[in-house]
Image (cartoon, rainbow, N blue to C red; front, side):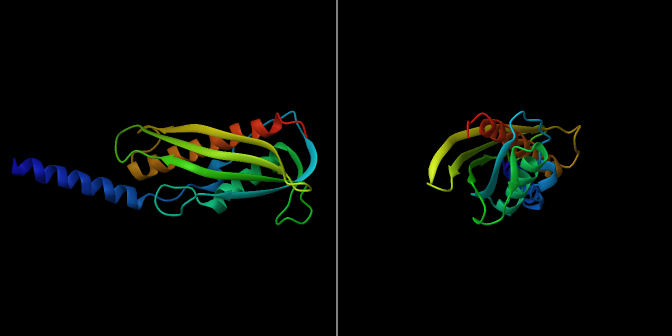
Length: 173
C-alpha cells in the first residue's frame, strides 16, 4: 500500500515537472502555409487575446504574429497594419480553451478560439465564428514529453489559424 502511494506521488511529481519544463509554442511553427483564392483589397489589423506565456501554451504575441504571417503569405488582405490607423477591418482572435494532456505517449491538444471580423468604419461585425482544432504529437515526433506537448500545441494552433483564415476568406467583403 505504501509503495503504491509513493509510486503515484512520484508519477504526479514527474508529470508536473515535465509540464512546467515545456516551452511555449513557436510562432513560426504555428504559421500555416495557405493558398487562398480570395485576395481582399483591404488593410486588416489583427488583435489576439486569451493566451498565456507559461508552460506548453500560446502567447497572444506569438498567435498574432503567426496569423499576420499567414495573412501576408496567403495574400488574404492587401496589407496587415499595426494599430487602428489605416485598417479597414479588425480581425479579433480570442483563445477560449486550450486543453492539454498531463502525461501519455501520444498527446492530443484541443484548441478553441473565437474569431470575429469587424468593419472599422461602422464597427459592424462581418463574421463571428468559433473554430475548434486539434494537434497530435507522438513519440515518433519527439522522445521528450515536453517537446511532444509543445509540438501538439503548435499543430493545434496551425490548424486553427488555417481554418479561421479559410472562414474569413469565405466572407464577402
